[in-house]
Image (tube, rainbow, N blue to C red):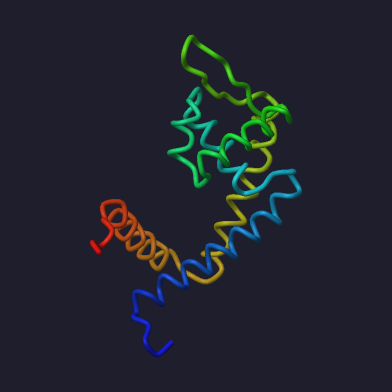
Length: 147
C-alpha cells in the first residue's frame, strides 16, 4: 500500500463500498424475489417507459447481453411486457411490477440511505454528494491514456 496514491486509495475504498453495498442490497431484495440489477432495471423502466432495450441498456449497469437475458426472465415472471411497433420493440411494466416496486422501493431506499445517515450528518452527505458528482462528471469525459 506504500506506493498507492490518495486517488487510488479512494478508488479502492469506493470499489469495496460498492461491492459490499451491492451484496447487501441483493440479500435485502431477496425478500421481494429481486436482485439489485433487476430492481435497477425495473426502476428505470418505471421512470422512462415505454423505452427500447437499447435506451434501457444505456441507463443501467448491465451489459447488452445481460440485459437481454434479464428482460426474458422479467417478461417470463410477468414484470414487463415488450410490444412490437413496426421496427421498434418497447418495454413497459406490468401491474405486477408496479405493485412490487410500490412495496420494495421505499424499503430499499431506506436501507441504502441508512449507509450514510448512520455515519454522516446532512452537511457531510451534501459534501460527499457534491464531490462524487464532480468526479463522476469528469469520468464521463475522461479518455484513456495513449499507449
